[in-house]
Length: 235
Image (tube, rainbow, N blue to C red; front, side):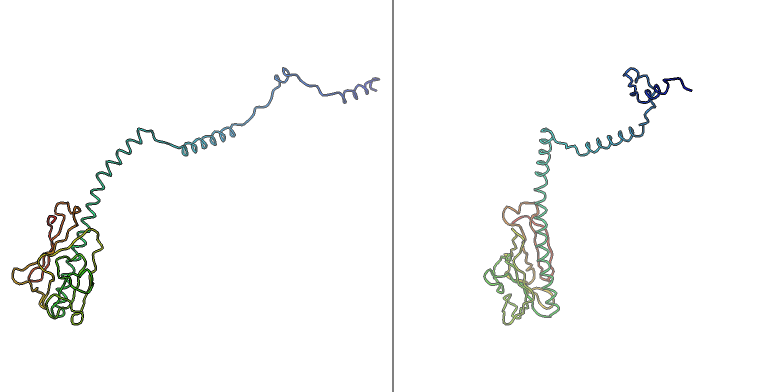
């Protein structure tokens, strides 16, 4: 038998409050090590990704010196490039207008040979698009027509209009011919200019825009009906 009073002692121990250890005693306890190496690596990787993203999106500006140098270089490039670009535009317009006049002369000769009849080209009058101007300016356009009378004048009732060229859409461009007011082709492809009577058209930019060396073109129609172009100085 248990000694008297033992049961009461056991019951007292059961209901006794838990013993709390002080800080010094807790420090002497042997705790298991924390295994957080994997979590630490993941945190470092996430931090590096955040830093890289911030570096990519970080705004970068220019210093005042860098901005002044950039503006100076841009001004030099514009000063060199703009005049050259304007010269290229003038040359392209001049070539386009010259080629159009060459095509007209070639077409007039071809039509005269095909029809076996007289065909003429004349400059258009300012007030009437179906009337020959009879002057030296061809800038308003020109007419290509069958010329039964062979006088270089378009007769709406008797002659047949083959094609009409309107005024040039190219700005600041002139076409002149001081020698004749019309060019007439015979049925054999020759012209009525007579021996040694070649005629020359001058295609040139207007006024101060014609300032390049060889900045104009000459389109020459020969007695045999052939046509050629060459460079010339501004008139």
